[in-house]
Length: 395
Image (tube, rainbow, N blue to C red):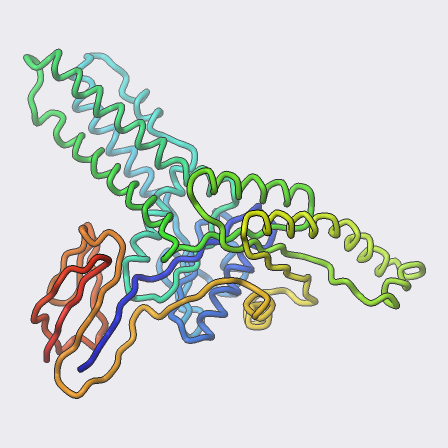
């Protein structure tokens, strides 16, 4: 029998202050796993779009092939956010103005604009990508820390706003049933409820440690350390766990004969001064990660730009026995059998949303196709499991 096991694409996120090397670490992570034979998509929501500079190729809003097994794309969520606000304003004009003639609905539209909203729609796009089996791993190079943290709290803010509107509608309709028609608000409520459901699914995915890994990139300075502490505390308070902290741009501890040259060599003197300045923060990071049970990765400065093909060298400094703590799995594995049947186990969060069809599956309005290996097979029967589906195919 041909047995195939499916796992939804895994997601590894990197966040941190601007200028700490987050994009380089993200790209190196993508290069490493592509070199290991995994199908990887590197995604950036950073408005600076430094991914293009790092990988050395032009990257658009659709997956661009960078090398074998590796694609990259930028997410521009502004259009999705603008569409949401346009829909909100349209529904408000058709409903709230009937409740309160002369009311300026733009006030409500402005209330619906939250810091980090663009990032929420970026996260929704990431959710769509992880529900596909087209890639084994999604590497998400997020916007600088402040944007990311706002995005993680914006879903709750949006939910509260939407729930207030729904409650207001309910109370108003009780008072003004004589003037209202049920259809006047049904579409708006359905739109708002769908938005709540989508937001909840994003939060559920991001908190699923079986599929998602949060990682911080920082530097050994006071500002870098304080930002790291603040981010860890924020994520912990919101039930997100951090797997790795990468402290970038470290100066190695050279041998004593090298440091002795600092007395006469200004270049060595500058390097030694930076090393001494970093020492107390290296200790602080170690204590912090030990207390929070987080893997700490020290990344030394390198005598080359970690860009383009040099990422193949750079990734070895991050991904080794002393480096990142993370295990990636293939999206699917095919084992040839003796007969003409195939057993497929599809593992995916939110199985209640999944609907099978002849050539793949649907989640919400998104259609995901089975691999080409299944083209000559037909579904015989399927059974829902706790975390997915078991599907039997035959030729």
